Length: 87
View (cartoon, rainbow, N blue to C red):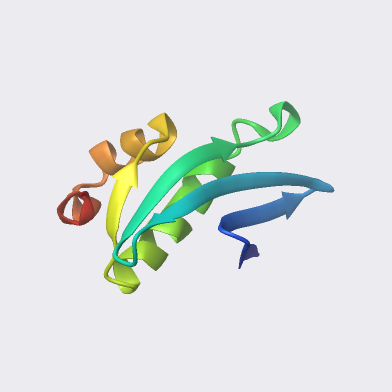
């Protein structure tokens, strides 16, 4: 389960948090600034999972997306359905 709180999407696995952080830029744009997955949990697709949830949220809210985080940019590059939302 991914929680959305305090400008973060968080998934806890084995007591460790994987996080997608964002900031609002005005009322219509979201800047995804940082993705983090603990070393012990990497390779399980957790970053992909939380990025997708974050992008789906932004799309549902009709927000423009600024992918300041390279992991978010790579995800968008691989999933063209999010391209139209990029600011």
